[in-house]
Amino acid sequence: MTTAVLTTLGRIRSAGAGSGRLRALRKNRLAMTGGIIAALFVLAALFAPLVAPYDPARPDFADALAAPGWSHWLGTDDLGRDQLSRVVYGARASMQVGVVAVALAFAVGVPLGLLAGYYGKLADSVVSRLTDTMLAFPFLVLAVGLAAVLGPSLGNATIAIGISQIPAVIRITRAETLRLRHVDYVAAAVANGGGDATVLVRHILPNATSALIVQATVGIPAAIIGEALLSFLGLGVQPPQASLGVMLSGAQSFLAPAPWMAVFPGLAVVAATLAFNLLGDGLRDVLDPRGATR
Image (cartoon, rainbow, N blue to C red; front, side, top):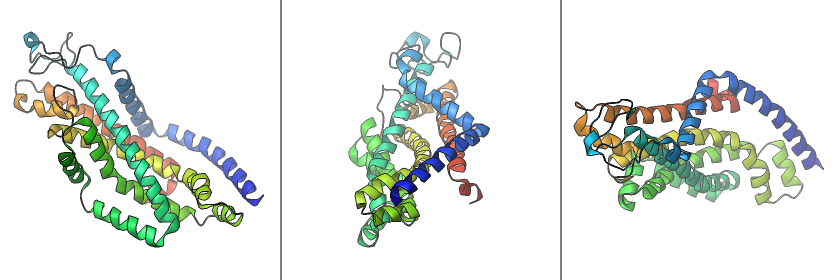
């Protein structure tokens, strides 16, 4: 009975807090702007065949290095391929890597963080040492090394970026578990005979979602930059497939005669990462007001 009462009260408080947080998020203009731009990128990625006016891999040598105009809004590259179509499909690859890599990091990092934070002792020691070892390598350095070992492809780049993000997810989940395992409703659930799995899945994990959502909005732009870097280095998407990193790599020899080859994919990377970062900052301030003062 005690557990049921505490759970019900917690849900009521969460419902009231949820509506207040939504109103606060709507008042944050930067976060809303970031959310709108991020939504546009997601929609463009989902409906790329409908949005792109041309086949992104089809060359047209008669229109090579054409400046932006009515026929090609963002110009063409050295093979006459439409830049707008390639940016749209490049954004699709970036969104795919961002979502799948973060999902992979969460699928591995959340269970490990829950185990380390809840059980402590040996489990915490092993997971923490593994996390510290991975954190000894900068995110991009670790991603490049893993991609080089796995081989160049979009799938392997996604796996490499996902593995590189696991330590951050473990740390966030472990910290939230350590904080939540001593609260009243968790103690009441344990006192009423709740098993470890029940406590972790029904009481701790749902109340840690706020921090995990913020971490996801931070992880996606990092994954976008990681995909662009790996593709730029030849370790991600392989030509003639479109990728923002591949486009930037191919533009190096044409910066003077055709600067639009580098400008537009570069702006797409900046816009996507900035949008998700603004959204993440807004969510952090709304979901955890203490973050604004830290």
